[in-house]
Image 1 (cartoon, rainbow, N blue to C red):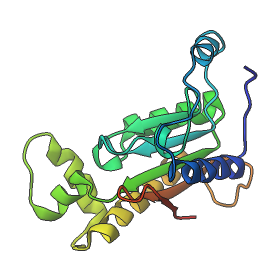
Image 2 (cartoon, rainbow, N blue to C red; image 1 turned 180 degrees about the vertical axis):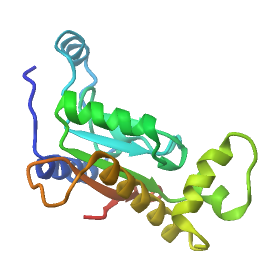
Image 3 (cartoon, rainbow, N blue to C red; image 1 turned 30 degrees about the vertical axis):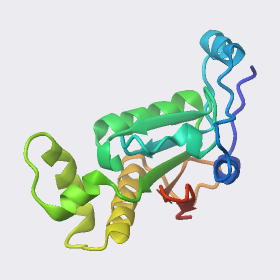
Length: 189
């Protein structure tokens, strides 16, 4: 396997094409073969994109984008919120693995967003819902709240890592929304 670094635009195209294949797939045709496991073990990984998404068990980026082993650098946390841990992981993927695209992927029926909208949870969940509340304010529409939450995470990544939309050859960060029922991904770019 030769390490191949792709541009942000090429990575976004690969994600969109992968999602199109996923819409009619019954299984994930992404490469999970013994050969790719061996190759990535011996030669390392070369993911073409970073996907920051929710821990929800219905949201599986490798399936949603028809990707196999070594293709996506996935960061999962309930509510796809961003803190220093996620920022460090993104920075690592960009600086050391050559990823040029970061996608923050929200989704419909997000329990973390619902918790932030519906009540004041206790315990450690509150750390997540407090972050989501900063994004959504008093929003009552679930779809709009999820989108606002994604937009805030995108903004935090850009600001924290100094990502500028003017740098055409640099890191690109965009938001997206996964429709669980249909399987379609709506990109905010």
